[in-house]
Length: 388
Image 1 (cartoon, rainbow, N blue to C red):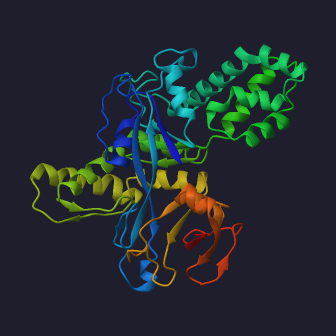
Image 2: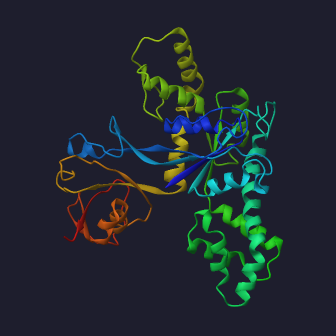
Image 3: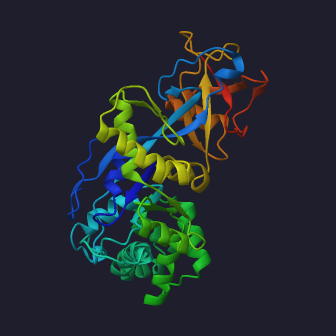
């Protein structure tokens, strides 16, 4: 699973990415600071089941911090959005290719209104323009793909060289959509072989609607951003965010100055601070953590992963009694899976060979044997049985 982080220059999207992943992505206010997509690993929180058995876990792929597991997933920071991206301006085609490869999008918007659509300093810019701008660029880009190839698609459909929905899927296969979903959208849209621009644009709109987009209202510590957020929060799926605050807290924690768990409402000072450091942390506490309860960065990630994409967390083990692997490591791994995933899906998530040799599974809590079609719940601890 992969989330895409997108925004115009100066929106703070790269800072958001850096804060979410602890990577070293380049940060600047000019266009195309991010030329090639930055790939990183981010985390969502989940209560660790080790408390149920009274033993500390031994994490391998998902660290545990005070009983909270940090479950990893991929995060992609793509090139900044500029007007005309769908026409190939700037890094438009690369930007949109990279963007649509993600399962969901986090649109980082400068809610302070202090940068225009090209990232230049200004005042009073309406963040709603940026939100609609992104949707317009993606929609027109998808429309352009369909339009350029429509004569070929319709000719092949008339010649019975394939079903219309299959031919459309071939053209859109790079959008990280399943064949079943494309077929469903084509049928629901009533697309015909003789479709004109209006029908193709309608199809492009419907395709965009399948891509979850969550708005990160960035720079929320600024008064202008707070005003804009209050005006728009009931109209949008938006989370207030201060990416710079999250990045500052994580760097302070890395330096050993504070103890801080991502997404927390507070931090603990554990080392003598300089006056400048104290003032910076006091500002974050008074203007971000106090009013909002967090910096918002972790909340955006978790809303995208858990609510938008409806993922669950599952813990595979080899010893159903001690919840450990064969070396005795307790709850070593934790995986994100789509809601509705089965025991067999978990087996293939672990390794293809394990999926191929699957003969059953055991629910470690109930000690009941379960079959390949058993639907898993979030927090399940599962042992996979394989043939030897």
